[in-house]
Length: 568
Image (cartoon, rainbow, N blue to C red; front, side, top):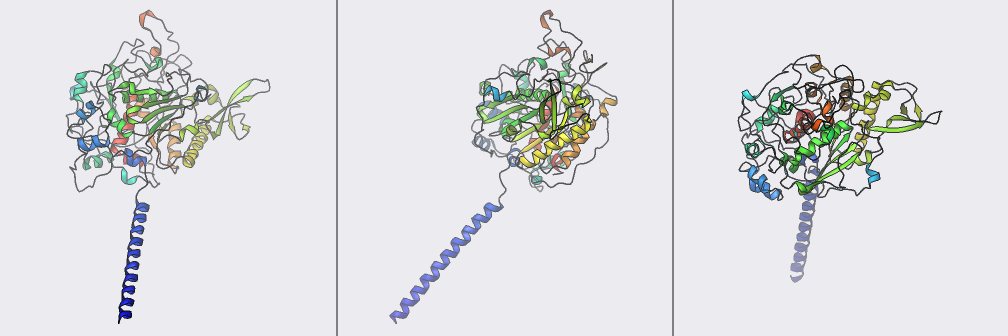
C-alpha cells in the first residue's frame, strides 16, 4: 500500500514539473512572438503624428502633464504656450539618446569641394509638382483685409507617382479645411530681445488641435499648388535678428529699402499649412540629426532653418556650431547643436551629389571633371543623419557643365562631348542607387525641388537684373514653368526602393521675383556703392522664401502627409 502511495506521489510530482515547464515554454514563446511582431523603431514613428481611429473625432491631445514628463527640458515659456491643450506631437522615441558628433579637424571639414560662389549659376527654368496637406484650427484666420490673394491659377495635374509599397503607410494621414475654418496660430514658444515683439508672440499659441477629420481633409490638399497671401504676422523672425544669416542673404541689413516682400505666406489651394511652431519642431527633432546636402541654395535653406528654430529657444546660447565656425560661403560643413534637445542641424556642401575631380590636359593644365557614375566623396557623412534634405540643380547651368566638353566622366572615360540633361539624369540615378543601397528605411529623406531664378535682360553672369522688384508675379508663363530636370527627378524617385519625399518648391518660387537679394547681397548702407552689373536673382533674402520651404518640412512632420508618401 505504501509503495503504491509513493508511486502515485512521484507521478503527481512529475506531472506538475511537466506542467510548469510547459507554462514556461508558452510564456517564453509569447514574449518572443510579441517582440518579433512589434514594429521596429522608426524615425517615422518618432516624428509623425499617429493616425487616430476614424470612429472617434474629438480624441484628446496629450495633456500638459504627460508632455512635460516626456519632455522635461521644455522651458517655462513653452509650458505656458502649451496650456491646456498640449502639443500635438508624437511620443519622443529618439533613434539614439546621443547625437554622434565627430570632432573633425578643420582640414576634414573643408571638403575640398571648391569654393561656393556667392552667386551660384542659377537654373534658368522653373518648376511645379504636387504634394498634399492642410490643417483645421481654433483661432480665426487672418482677416481678409490683411490678405492679397493672387496667382490662383490651375496649372494642371501632374503625373501621379505610384506603384510602391511603404512601410510607413499606416503612419501617414492628411487633412485639410476650408479657408473659412478656424485655425490656431502657433510658432515660437520663446520670447527674447531677438523676437519680433511681445505682442506678436502673445498672439501665437501651441500647435493647432488636429482631429481625425483633419487628416481626411489634408488628404485632398496639394501643399505645392496655391498662392502667396499677405500676412501681417510674417516674417517668422525679425530681419537682422538672426546671427546665422551671412551677408549675401541679409538684404535688410544691407540696405534694401522695401520690406513688403517679407509679409507673404504660402497658402495651398483649399487649405492652410499648420502654423509654424519652432518649439514643437525641436521636440520632434529630439535626439536626431537633420542634414541638408547640396549647393549654396541648400545653404540658403540651412541658414533659414537655423533662424526659425532659434525662435523656439528660451536660452539661445544653447544653440551653437560645435567647432565654433562662423557660416561663410567658403566652408562646406557645419554642425549646429541644440543642447536642450540633443539634436543637430547640419549642412554638407555637395554641388552635384556626384564626384567632382580634376584631370591634367596635354598642356599640363588642370581641368575639372564630373564623374556622373560615382557618388560625392562627402557621402560618408550623409549616412550619419536621421533626416536628410538633398538638392542639386543650380550648378548644372554653369558654362562647363552646360557645354559638357571634356568634362563628364564614367569610369575612366572622359566624354569629349556629352549632353548636360542626360548627364543630370545619370547623376540623379547614381544618387538614387546610393540612397537605395545605403539608407535604412527608418530615415526620413527629402529631395528639394528646383528653385526658380528671375533674371531680366541676361543671366547671372551676363547682366541679368531683378532690382526694384517689390511684388510677386501675378500672371504669366513663368507661373506654369516646370524644368525638364524636375521631371527627371520625379521619374527617378518613382523607381526608388527607399521612400523619398519630393519637396517640390518650384512653382511657389516661380511667383517670387521680389524675393532675391539683387544688389543687396552686399552692404550698401552709409553711402557705399555696389555695382549693379552683377545681381543675385537666384538666391533668396532672409527672412524670405526659404522659410516657406522649411515650413513645408514642418508641415510634413505635423500632418504625416500621407499623400507625399503614397507611392512607396
